[in-house]
Length: 63
Ligand code: SF4
Image (cartoon, rainbow, N blue to C red; front, side, top):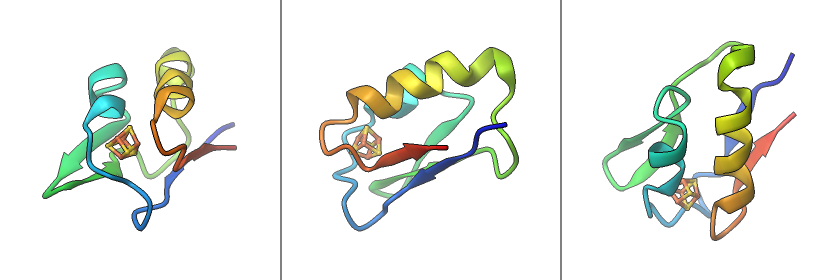
């Protein structure tokens, strides 16, 4: 199973990950955070991976 981690130092707060996977990522103040502490549900994994791939500063790791 896969979990998402965001490097908050690198995140520029663009909001794209939340747009692509609102069940997995959410904006808090001016940074994105992972909304799911546990494994990403199978049906949200593709959206989460899109967010990680399209993050402009590639600060999302899914592993
Ligand atoms: S896409 Fe990347 S830079 Fe933009 S809010 Fe999400 S984690 Fe931060």
